[in-house]
Amino acid sequence: MTRRRLAVLALACVAACRAREAANPLPVPPYQEVRSGAIGRIDGRITFPPGVAPGDIVLWLDDVRAGKALPLARRYEIDHERGAFAPQVQGALVGGALLVRSLDATHFRVTFTSEGSDSVLAVVQETGVGQVVPTARPLVLEGMVLAASDERPASRAWIRVFDQPYFAQPDSAGRFTIDSVPAGVWRMRAWHPRLGEREARVGVDSSGLSFADVAY
Image (cartoon, rainbow, N blue to C red; front, side, top):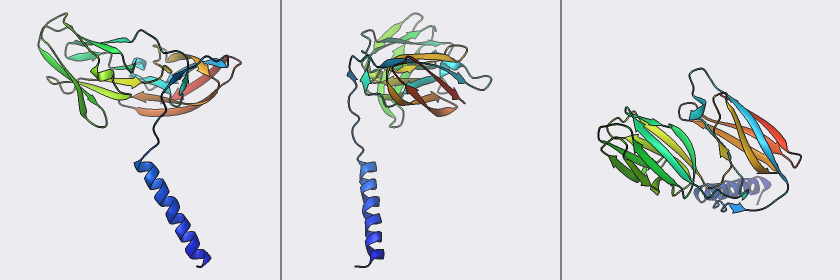
């Protein structure tokens, strides 16, 4: 067999292996709580175009699989007022409880779907001011969850569900903090429903404070 044919066969094998890996990705290991002295803090700032609400951006460290303890309190809220949701974007932990609250006097129905697969996770109906319906079903799995009003399809909200605690949302000036981060070089991701995703690399060591800037 000639060297050329051997090279072609080798390339074909590599391509086939990569195709199998793409079709059957390795499972993500579960997050583990560990105690480590080598931790730091990330302080950062995100810059965004005029007219963008910084509270509609969520940031997280993408590949942290071990670190600080998960909080015991995991209760989140979403309000429906004047046909709109508030907040429009929020981060939440897997296993949490979501309180859906109506501030309108009219009937409305909210459908929660897993964005990407469009599978329905929960349907909540409310009929009056002050009614609160608790549900845990939208927060069962890691990923992006879309909340949409059946009465006003243009009214939407997004919940980014995480299985680890290293996520944050910026304040009105675009500043954010992620604490108790294990030492290492991490990929930070930011997401906005209209502007999409941005990425940045940030290094954290045991000396303490690190800084990260993310720009849209």
